[in-house]
Image (cartoon, rainbow, N blue to C red; front, side):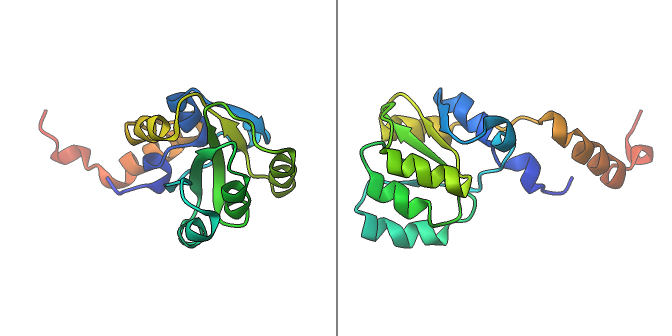
Length: 149
């Protein structure tokens, strides 16, 4: 079968389940099936982080809620989700800007390292909206006549 980004990359719902996170800004129903292509740990200064954040696409940023500098930088890039470690809520300004831009924010228990380890072990699952892709792949790429009975 061919590689499929939609089948291989985790969704926001899968990420939140893996880290025990909950949405604190944004519409979960609207974003739960959005894909995440990569992860950035926001543990450095905002200036240093900016170059890494600008390289990513459809990324998830993990940082502390007490790091509005990192969150604000991330909100100006191709970020699909920001997770705040330690269940620390970000500043109201960060929440307001995220709501304006439609970027969901979540909080999760545990430190940034623990959350990153949980994400490293994530397993994606076929979502109901992806069943059609699986059927099409089977139709297009499996030659049933060549499979021994």
